[in-house]
Image (tube, rainbow, N blue to C red; front, side):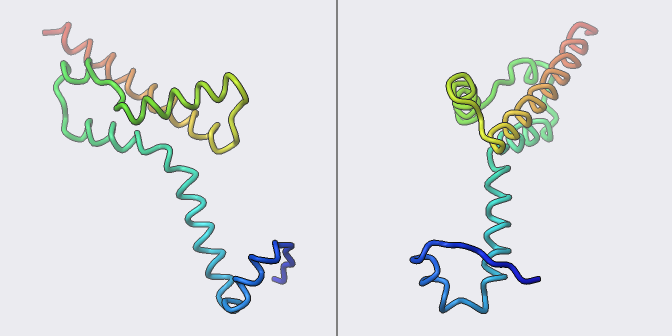
Length: 117
């Protein structure tokens, strides 16, 4: 497929020596872009690692987001209130909401286990 792009002159100058590697550069750039778009969901890894350790119901009940994750959530909340979220940020927010939903389910089940004892 032939594609024509308008790019700044300084970028064209830097790409000229790499002309035959432009498809590879684009592929690598897209991979990095996609990884960056979901990197805001690192909080999921923290939560999944916590649950992988099979914590006791008491531990689940006191589970709180890390300071880093809470800061990201607060940042998204503030930005949404004042200027709105980009599509990438909106996706991150939806992922955080889903993660919170999973934690609430785990806490509800932990609560039931604690009350059955």
